[in-house]
Length: 320
Image 1 (cartoon, rainbow, N blue to C red):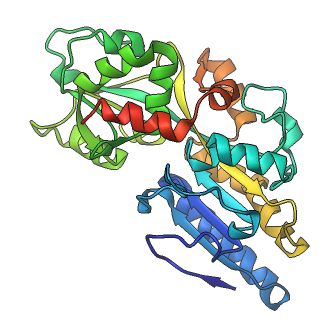
Image 2: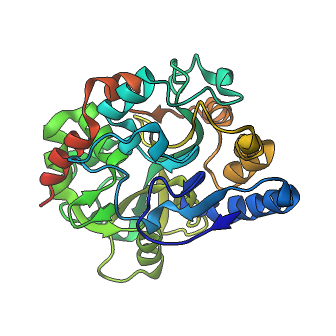
């Protein structure tokens, strides 16, 4: 058994590769290490559990070939609508049966988040909401929706995750889905800040002059400011933008990895995710029902109809 940390990934180097959102990385890794300790010498595999934000490259850029099954880890966890959602990769993976159904996948297969083909298991939802610094409104109304935000007078006062013309793909895809390229152009005029959500939160809490009026951040980071009377958290009327945490398991994964897969779909991991406001879809459905909220998931139809890697390049060009 072996774990390594580095910033560029050799796709064939690991049996299990888990790139997780920052809020759940440490507790999930701790539980995983406990599992490894229990397995002991009975099983040997190479793995990496790391924060997704530590990697600036996608698995496949727009010019790279689609990897063969043997070039990929047997167990993969990744965050966001990334290269695994590329049309050419999905078509090859489905046609050649790269992946198999994960235990528990049938629980929500009939929901909008369930992959009917059984390849992609969304184990956790990272939902993005708006956070408003009330001290910077200067009489302007608090936008209650992304539509109101786009039509509002907040030029260069909005923050989203990302920088250097590589911005949050789920935010861009969702705005494009609902408002088209015109919506992306409006958003590009509003965005004046980029970076990691933790940086946005720090700026808003500190009250420095050069800080965003409105930030689009994961619900986890928004909740860090829930007791700050100068801050208002807005769950947008269109729904919070969904960034999926996806589990993929190769169809030919050795049975020695069953414990690994079972851990990542276990109640233990579900609780970790729930406590960090990145719960399993079934738990989010209950939360939404109780709070009369919506989710804004781009949907499998959008993913099927668009070449997401190429589209993301086009959308980011508006921010140059």
